[in-house]
Length: 104
Ligand SMILES: [Zn+2]
Image (cartoon, rainbow, N blue to C red; front, side):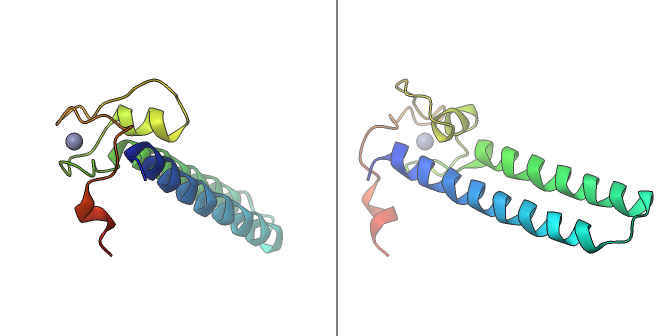
């Protein structure tokens, strides 16, 4: 598995979790009392969770040096095909994952 595949897999998991959360939030809002304050609270909650999921893409740690990959992690996660590198250790995202991550 390359670092690029690792980043994509990770963002797929976040996207799946965000989708499940929205689904649950939608069902809960359907049963919630039709009060404006309740709806505002739900809207804010959904916004915060989505912002956190989005932000987490910037905080994915580099499997080589362990520092967050920043915009590189984000761009690779959303599928940009260009040859990206870790901003800290300059490792390419198209090399195989370092072995220590695979031993589980
Ligand atoms: Zn690195």
